[in-house]
Length: 252
Ligand SMILES: [Zn+2]
Image (cartoon, rainbow, N blue to C red; front, side):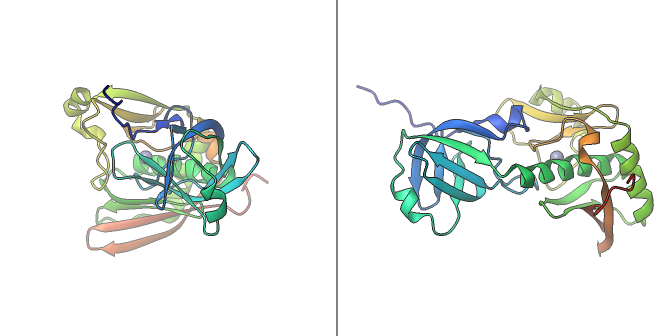
Protein backbone atom coordinates (compact mmCIF):
# COMPACT_ATOMS: atom_id res chain seq x y z
CA UNK A 1 0.00 0.00 0.00
CA UNK A 2 1.32 3.42 -0.92
CA UNK A 3 0.82 6.12 1.65
CA UNK A 4 -0.59 9.42 0.54
CA UNK A 5 2.14 11.99 0.01
CA UNK A 6 2.27 14.39 2.94
CA UNK A 7 1.06 17.78 1.88
CA UNK A 8 2.26 20.73 3.95
CA UNK A 9 0.21 23.32 2.20
CA UNK A 10 -2.58 25.03 4.05
CA UNK A 11 -5.64 26.28 2.17
CA UNK A 12 -5.24 30.07 2.25
CA UNK A 13 -8.77 31.41 2.69
CA UNK A 14 -7.49 34.97 3.30
CA UNK A 15 -6.17 35.19 -0.29
CA UNK A 16 -9.66 35.03 -1.77
CA UNK A 17 -11.55 36.87 0.98
CA UNK A 18 -9.59 39.21 3.24
CA UNK A 19 -12.74 40.00 5.23
CA UNK A 20 -13.18 36.43 6.54
CA UNK A 21 -12.63 36.60 10.31
CA UNK A 22 -13.02 32.90 11.16
CA UNK A 23 -13.25 29.42 9.71
CA UNK A 24 -13.64 25.81 10.75
CA UNK A 25 -10.47 23.76 10.27
CA UNK A 26 -8.74 20.49 11.19
CA UNK A 27 -5.42 20.23 12.98
CA UNK A 28 -2.68 18.77 10.75
CA UNK A 29 0.22 18.88 13.19
CA UNK A 30 1.26 20.41 16.50
CA UNK A 31 4.88 20.89 17.50
CA UNK A 32 7.14 23.40 19.21
CA UNK A 33 7.06 25.67 16.12
CA UNK A 34 3.31 26.03 16.10
CA UNK A 35 -0.01 24.57 14.99
CA UNK A 36 -0.65 23.62 11.37
CA UNK A 37 -4.22 23.51 10.06
CA UNK A 38 -5.71 22.19 6.80
CA UNK A 39 -7.15 25.66 6.09
CA UNK A 40 -6.92 29.06 7.72
CA UNK A 41 -7.94 32.72 7.79
CA UNK A 42 -4.62 33.65 9.48
CA UNK A 43 -2.24 35.62 7.20
CA UNK A 44 1.41 34.55 7.67
CA UNK A 45 3.99 37.36 7.90
CA UNK A 46 5.19 38.18 4.41
CA UNK A 47 5.43 40.85 1.73
CA UNK A 48 6.06 43.39 4.49
CA UNK A 49 2.73 42.67 6.21
CA UNK A 50 2.77 41.42 9.82
CA UNK A 51 1.33 37.98 10.63
CA UNK A 52 -2.09 37.64 12.24
CA UNK A 53 -2.89 37.05 15.89
CA UNK A 54 -6.10 35.52 17.24
CA UNK A 55 -7.27 32.26 18.77
CA UNK A 56 -8.03 28.63 18.04
CA UNK A 57 -11.17 27.33 19.72
CA UNK A 58 -11.27 23.58 20.40
CA UNK A 59 -14.41 21.42 20.32
CA UNK A 60 -14.54 21.39 24.15
CA UNK A 61 -14.34 25.18 24.26
CA UNK A 62 -10.64 25.38 25.17
CA UNK A 63 -9.07 28.51 23.67
CA UNK A 64 -5.50 28.67 22.44
CA UNK A 65 -4.19 32.22 22.04
CA UNK A 66 -2.19 32.70 18.81
CA UNK A 67 0.39 35.48 19.00
CA UNK A 68 1.70 35.42 15.42
CA UNK A 69 1.51 33.56 12.12
CA UNK A 70 4.57 32.57 10.09
CA UNK A 71 5.40 30.66 6.96
CA UNK A 72 6.95 27.25 7.65
CA UNK A 73 9.93 25.72 5.89
CA UNK A 74 7.91 23.74 3.36
CA UNK A 75 6.20 25.70 0.58
CA UNK A 76 2.62 26.60 1.50
CA UNK A 77 3.13 25.67 5.15
CA UNK A 78 1.53 28.08 7.65
CA UNK A 79 2.40 28.00 11.35
CA UNK A 80 0.02 29.42 13.96
CA UNK A 81 2.44 30.46 16.72
CA UNK A 82 0.92 30.14 20.20
CA UNK A 83 1.28 32.91 22.77
CA UNK A 84 3.38 32.02 25.85
CA UNK A 85 1.57 29.97 28.50
CA UNK A 86 -0.51 27.81 26.14
CA UNK A 87 1.36 24.52 26.82
CA UNK A 88 -1.52 22.88 28.68
CA UNK A 89 -4.10 23.63 26.01
CA UNK A 90 -1.70 22.61 23.24
CA UNK A 91 -1.02 19.25 24.92
CA UNK A 92 -4.65 18.30 24.36
CA UNK A 93 -4.54 19.06 20.63
CA UNK A 94 -4.24 16.10 18.21
CA UNK A 95 -3.98 15.85 14.41
CA UNK A 96 -7.48 15.53 12.99
CA UNK A 97 -9.11 17.59 15.76
CA UNK A 98 -11.72 20.11 14.63
CA UNK A 99 -11.03 23.70 15.70
CA UNK A 100 -12.40 27.15 15.01
CA UNK A 101 -9.74 29.60 13.82
CA UNK A 102 -10.54 33.23 14.57
CA UNK A 103 -8.31 36.22 13.89
CA UNK A 104 -7.98 39.41 15.93
CA UNK A 105 -10.02 41.34 13.38
CA UNK A 106 -9.39 44.82 14.78
CA UNK A 107 -5.63 44.29 14.41
CA UNK A 108 -5.90 42.66 10.96
CA UNK A 109 -8.22 45.39 9.63
CA UNK A 110 -5.54 47.94 10.55
CA UNK A 111 -3.03 45.87 8.53
CA UNK A 112 -5.46 45.88 5.59
CA UNK A 113 -6.14 49.62 5.76
CA UNK A 114 -2.41 50.37 5.94
CA UNK A 115 -1.51 47.86 3.23
CA UNK A 116 -3.91 49.38 0.70
CA UNK A 117 -2.70 52.86 1.75
CA UNK A 118 0.90 51.85 0.91
CA UNK A 119 -0.27 50.95 -2.61
CA UNK A 120 -1.84 54.43 -2.87
CA UNK A 121 1.55 55.85 -1.89
CA UNK A 122 3.12 53.84 -4.73
CA UNK A 123 0.75 55.60 -7.12
CA UNK A 124 1.76 59.01 -5.71
CA UNK A 125 5.52 58.36 -5.65
CA UNK A 126 6.65 56.96 -9.01
CA UNK A 127 9.89 55.37 -7.79
CA UNK A 128 10.87 51.75 -7.00
CA UNK A 129 10.15 50.47 -3.49
CA UNK A 130 13.07 48.87 -1.64
CA UNK A 131 11.51 48.16 1.73
CA UNK A 132 8.13 47.85 3.34
CA UNK A 133 6.72 47.14 6.80
CA UNK A 134 3.04 47.03 7.72
CA UNK A 135 1.99 46.69 11.36
CA UNK A 136 -1.17 47.57 13.31
CA UNK A 137 0.42 50.80 14.60
CA UNK A 138 2.17 52.19 11.54
CA UNK A 139 3.28 51.38 8.01
CA UNK A 140 6.48 52.41 6.33
CA UNK A 141 7.60 52.31 2.75
CA UNK A 142 11.15 52.97 1.51
CA UNK A 143 11.50 54.48 -1.94
CA UNK A 144 14.66 54.29 -4.03
CA UNK A 145 15.01 58.01 -4.86
CA UNK A 146 16.82 61.18 -3.85
CA UNK A 147 14.25 63.86 -4.61
CA UNK A 148 12.60 65.41 -1.54
CA UNK A 149 9.05 64.37 -0.62
CA UNK A 150 6.47 66.55 1.04
CA UNK A 151 4.42 65.26 3.97
CA UNK A 152 1.31 67.40 3.52
CA UNK A 153 1.13 66.79 -0.23
CA UNK A 154 1.30 63.02 0.24
CA UNK A 155 -1.31 63.05 3.03
CA UNK A 156 -3.61 65.10 0.79
CA UNK A 157 -2.98 62.73 -2.13
CA UNK A 158 -3.93 59.69 -0.05
CA UNK A 159 -7.06 61.47 1.28
CA UNK A 160 -8.08 62.24 -2.29
CA UNK A 161 -7.90 58.54 -3.29
CA UNK A 162 -9.72 57.50 -0.08
CA UNK A 163 -12.46 60.06 -0.72
CA UNK A 164 -12.86 58.95 -4.34
CA UNK A 165 -13.89 55.43 -3.14
CA UNK A 166 -11.94 53.36 -5.68
CA UNK A 167 -12.86 49.64 -5.73
CA UNK A 168 -9.98 47.30 -4.76
CA UNK A 169 -9.80 43.74 -6.09
CA UNK A 170 -7.31 40.98 -6.74
CA UNK A 171 -6.94 38.62 -9.64
CA UNK A 172 -4.50 35.95 -10.77
CA UNK A 173 -2.33 36.32 -13.87
CA UNK A 174 0.05 33.81 -15.45
CA UNK A 175 3.79 34.13 -14.92
CA UNK A 176 4.11 34.60 -18.69
CA UNK A 177 1.78 37.60 -18.49
CA UNK A 178 3.89 39.03 -15.64
CA UNK A 179 7.12 38.49 -17.61
CA UNK A 180 5.57 40.35 -20.54
CA UNK A 181 4.85 43.33 -18.23
CA UNK A 182 7.95 43.79 -16.02
CA UNK A 183 6.70 47.27 -15.07
CA UNK A 184 4.10 45.56 -12.87
CA UNK A 185 6.75 44.73 -10.28
CA UNK A 186 7.01 47.88 -8.19
CA UNK A 187 8.96 46.48 -5.31
CA UNK A 188 12.70 45.84 -5.53
CA UNK A 189 12.78 44.05 -2.16
CA UNK A 190 9.73 41.86 -2.50
CA UNK A 191 9.48 39.78 -5.65
CA UNK A 192 6.24 37.93 -6.31
CA UNK A 193 6.43 34.21 -5.47
CA UNK A 194 7.43 32.16 -8.52
CA UNK A 195 7.00 28.58 -9.61
CA UNK A 196 3.28 28.27 -8.94
CA UNK A 197 2.38 29.17 -12.53
CA UNK A 198 0.28 32.13 -11.46
CA UNK A 199 0.82 35.40 -9.62
CA UNK A 200 -1.72 37.35 -7.61
CA UNK A 201 -2.07 41.01 -8.60
CA UNK A 202 -3.85 43.70 -6.63
CA UNK A 203 -5.72 46.38 -8.54
CA UNK A 204 -6.96 49.66 -7.14
CA UNK A 205 -9.35 50.64 -9.89
CA UNK A 206 -7.81 53.42 -11.98
CA UNK A 207 -4.97 54.00 -9.47
CA UNK A 208 -2.49 51.15 -9.07
CA UNK A 209 -1.82 47.60 -10.23
CA UNK A 210 0.98 45.42 -8.81
CA UNK A 211 1.72 41.86 -7.73
CA UNK A 212 0.80 41.44 -4.06
CA UNK A 213 -0.19 38.52 -1.84
CA UNK A 214 -1.36 40.68 1.07
CA UNK A 215 -4.77 41.36 2.53
CA UNK A 216 -6.55 44.52 1.42
CA UNK A 217 -9.72 46.53 1.99
CA UNK A 218 -12.46 46.21 -0.67
CA UNK A 219 -12.68 49.94 -1.40
CA UNK A 220 -10.25 52.79 -0.70
CA UNK A 221 -12.99 54.48 1.39
CA UNK A 222 -12.53 51.66 3.95
CA UNK A 223 -8.99 52.97 4.70
CA UNK A 224 -10.34 55.98 6.57
CA UNK A 225 -8.10 58.81 7.72
CA UNK A 226 -4.43 57.98 7.18
CA UNK A 227 -1.69 60.57 7.49
CA UNK A 228 2.00 60.71 6.63
CA UNK A 229 3.59 61.05 10.08
CA UNK A 230 7.23 61.19 9.01
CA UNK A 231 9.51 61.38 5.99
CA UNK A 232 13.11 60.35 6.58
CA UNK A 233 16.22 60.27 4.45
CA UNK A 234 17.48 56.78 5.36
CA UNK A 235 20.34 56.70 2.86
CA UNK A 236 21.58 58.73 -0.10
CA UNK A 237 19.06 56.94 -2.31
CA UNK A 238 16.37 55.97 0.17
CA UNK A 239 13.40 58.07 1.29
CA UNK A 240 11.26 56.48 4.01
CA UNK A 241 7.59 57.43 4.29
CA UNK A 242 5.81 56.51 7.55
CA UNK A 243 2.01 56.31 7.74
CA UNK A 244 -0.24 56.47 10.80
CA UNK A 245 -3.97 56.63 11.46
CA UNK A 246 -5.32 60.08 12.18
CA UNK A 247 -6.49 60.29 15.79
CA UNK A 248 -9.68 61.90 14.69
CA UNK A 249 -11.35 62.19 11.31
CA UNK A 250 -10.77 65.63 9.77
CA UNK A 251 -14.43 65.51 8.66
CA UNK A 252 -15.67 65.58 12.26
ZN1 LIG B 1 1.12 44.92 -1.32
